[in-house]
Length: 358
Ligand code: PMP
Image (cartoon, rainbow, N blue to C red; front, side, top):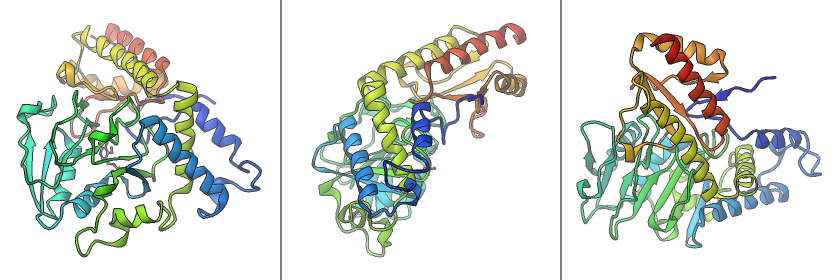
């Protein structure tokens, strides 16, 4: 068996130690006589798995007591609707800051529920600065995407929004570094990049924001429903929740917490950007201070070599490097679980490829 270095934007690599532990516990979990997949979500075994996962996530992110952690389904794409349905209120106004493709999708959904005031840029090669944000005093919330997965643009700061709650789609950078949860009203993310298998979506919501949603909101789209039932209103994605718990344990025990994780991520991304910048053959268009630690898009000087690059990379055990169809070129997603050796192998392959083809 040969596991490759998989640079997919998501679903993405999981830590090998996590997959091995899931394998070891696959047939029978901890003397329960059954697989986690077969457990009732209301039984004491699964309840203990769920509680441990939540406690570890809270510890990793230092989530204040005044926040609920909701384990949901429907992906970040459902949160694009759930946020306005629950926060917009009767006034129907919200501010959106957009510096990439996912922010645009979030707006498209929010427009169904009210009027949206947008800050955006001509080109998605940086994040707007604080003094460029067009914020309205009467907005119900401000939504932004701290890390745009497709363009590889990451905010170097947390927007200051005064008393207006800040909502962040952290799908592609959650747990990559420490954050101050208290600065946010809601943080949400799909699991399939830095957390675990696809199918689980987590929302960390300041309790005072959990109110009656817009009238007509389906039960499943109300934060109140899930908060009141401790994320067990209906059957949650139990296996994904369990694997997420293993990832949280890995972050705590094997990595040593988010400060350590951030150090490793800085080093990995630093090596890759340094290799791109040192060469005339590779290029990344993003402003230095807004370059993503997680998603590194780059182009080849000659786009006709793209297919050969991907083919040779795959033979070298470096897969899923094709850029998103909307931007072309390459993209290396280097989430927490991508070993530093994977980045080293990619950097070495890029140098060798350039030597042979430039
Ligand atoms: N937001 C961001 C920043 C993303 O990267 C993605 C997925 N690539 C999404 C939203 C959509 O997530 P999902 O597929 O979980 O709905």
